[in-house]
Image (tube, rainbow, N blue to C red; front, side, top):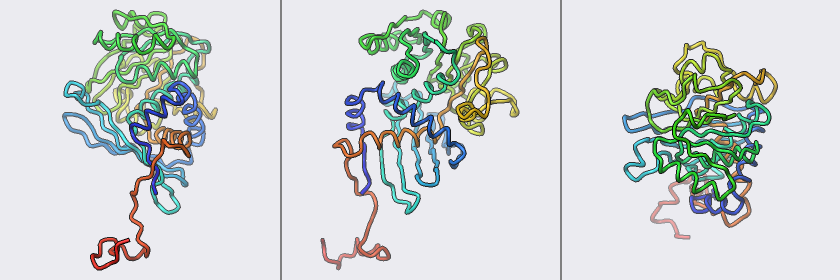
Length: 342
């Protein structure tokens, strides 16, 4: 039987263990898998684009486990009463091809994205960073804040969104958890004094959410909103003068901030920084950018983390997903009306 972690039990797990604790644990899983990056099969995600959004499949394997995630991104969905992003994912045994673990991944992707941001900031931001600016206060914002606090100790937030109700939502959710939240009046106000800037907006457009003039020397930028062709958030001038780090270069050149740049624009992959194969930050004044679009290995890590953390508990249930006739060569026996009913 395939083990299932459904929406209700995913939420129960997060409440049971606490989002911040899970994010720290997931960051460890991510770092372990990124450090063995070269063992994985890697391909840009398979995307089906329409004017309303995108539906994607994100596969990978380390030779022992195979995983994929199904995910959509539809920026107009909230206005129609739907989530912008929904997802589910699977782990399978490479030895026999059977799916072993099936999970919702709308909540899990939010955790994975925030944990990946925190891992990048841990590797690239200046030591002692204490203030996080969030440009965009949507569904990702609380997870991003909790990940940065769990991994980096950051409790001071400066938040801006064109929707003031979204800022109020962040304050309502995070101030009771001990964060100090400044409701910024503009992007310029939000980034004032920030050590780390996270941009996460939803519009599927070539936008300049953050300009070069707003990025001070030494700042680290997690650019996580530019995640499909034709969608960007950063002024190209920021990229021209910063050290740019990505997950998987072929995918990021299609979907990330660097789609604005020449095909040979130099970037470093995060796994190279984590393993010491390439430099990360080289000076306190250097601007670093993590141009993150989300990659299948991160989903692989998140699924492993969720599976292991909930194994043996009532959070997992069994789902009869694989047809298993008594005789592996007689699939018809399952539908043969003349066969005895067991």
